Length: 219
Image (cartoon, rainbow, N blue to C red; front, top):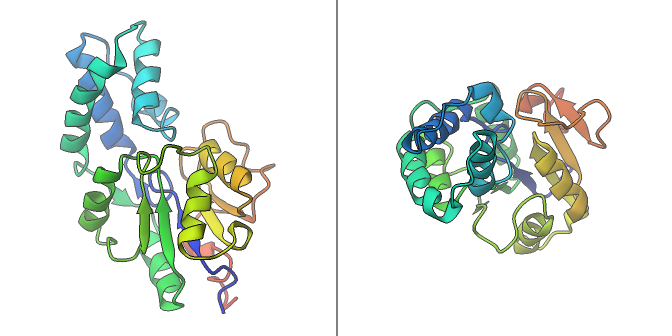
C-alpha cells in the first residue's frame, strides 16, 4: 500500500517547465506598455503567486504604476498565446505519475495558474488523464500560500490533510502545506524563490519525482 492516500502536485516548476513561456507572455505585455523586457531568470523568481501578482511585480520593477485591471486582459491574451509555445515535463514526471497511478493513488493538482489554462496544458503534454481533480488559482476565493485549496482538495477525497502529500517547488507551496498541515515533498529543480531547501521541514527533497517516498527501491 502506498504511504499516502492522495498526492497533490503543484504545476509550474514542479511538473512542468513553463518558465520561458510565462516570461515571454509577460515580456510581450511589458512591450505593449513601452516597458523594457525582463530577463527570464528574473521572471522565474516571480512565478508562483498567481498571474496578477506576477504582472504587478514586473510593472513595479519597471517603474510603472499601471492599473492592473487595465493591464491584465492584454496579459491574458499573451498568456494563452504562449501557453503551448515550448512547455515540457521535467525529467521523471511522466514515469512517476504512471507509477503512482499504477498503485491506484488518486492524484490532484493545486496551482495558482488560472484554471482555464491548466487542462489544455496537461492535455498537450499527454498527462491530462492522470489527475482526478485540478484546482486553479481562481477556483476558490483563496489561493496558495493559503492552505485552504489543499484543505478543499483533501475534503473532496474524504481524507485528512495530514495524511496526504503535497509536492511542490516554491515558498508559496511550502507555506500552503504548512498552513494546511499537509506533509510536503520539495523538488530542487523548480523555482524555489527564497526557500532554503536544506532547512525546510519537508518529508524529502528530490531531484527527480521518481525518488518520491514509496516509489524508489520498492519502498
